Amino acid sequence: MTDTGQAREAGKDGAQPGLPVLPPAAALVEIAVLVILPGLLDYVVSGFPTLNETQPHFYWLPVLLLTLQYGSPSGLLAAGVAIVLSSFLGWPEQEIGENHFSYLLRIWLQPVLWIATAVVLGQFRLRQIEAKQALERSVTRLAEQRAELAAHAERLRDRCDRLERVIATRHEASGSTLIAALGRTQTAARADAERALHDSIALAFGECRLTMFSLAGDELRAAFQHGAKGERTPQRISIASPFFQAIVRRREALSVLTPAGEQSLDGHGLAAVPVIASGHVIGAVLLETCSPDHLDPATPDRLAALAMAMAAGHPFVVGMEQTSSTVSLATAEAAPAEAVRFPSWRRVRRQFRHLSVVSSLSGRRG
Image (cartoon, rainbow, N blue to C red):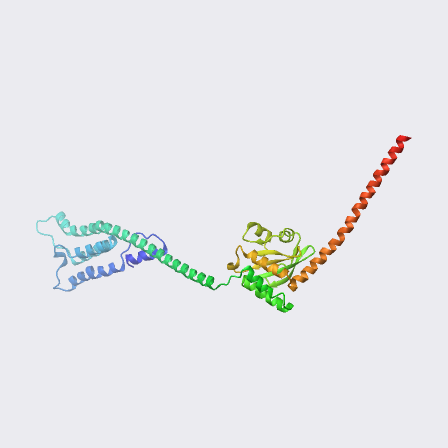
């Protein structure tokens, strides 16, 4: 693997590669062609020039070439192979009058210089390779970041285009439009009115799940539902629930977009408003689920418009109002009886007080 390939692999893995320890495959091929092949030709072919007698030595070329191209490992390997082949081919003979020290210095000077050259020049080359690898890693990281930014920008552009198309084709139903649509439910038969009611809810909130509750005594009971039935759809909400207290007692419009509304909803849905008829709370409208496009600060207003229109005469709400009126009537009938008892208790207390005063005056006269 070349230095560039190593740098790319290291950039992908996120690791910091070190300096090369072993020569690359290209260096081995060049050693075989520039060092081993000329040595074999010198040994086999009789007419081939003797490498050990050339000045400067032929093996300076492959040693310098591999050292400057690949660094110390390749240069040292080339120098080692060159020394072995030079010894195999035979060193020049010792001249007459030349002592052993001079002879050894003459024949080993160039091999030692090959090794020194491979070490010294190879270290400079290794520093260049290290700097090159660092630059390639930086370029790889920058290219990856650029590709990620380009992909992110492309996704943002696609998302903006989709949102523009959705906003351009979305029909926002105002309160007046919703009331006009619900007006058609008040003059039709019950089955047609419920169908029109489903259409009106879809017009106001799109694909959603909505439940209407009727007030029966001390609890709210599910009486009408739009959309698929959910697993967490409440069928009864007792008086102890914060939802009941906020809707029936305080007559508040609730929304998860406000902290107080989210707490009062008690996990039952996204928004809710009371249904009021003749000044009394007769039920509630609960929006359980809807698309994020239809959940905004105006959602309770659309629910309130829906509740007002239904309270004006929808058959479903008329039944709720009759039930609520029956409960209110029973409470009203019980109230006068309680009021009659209190005056009688006052008369009894006045009579006891009068008798005590009379008895005290009689005692003084006696």
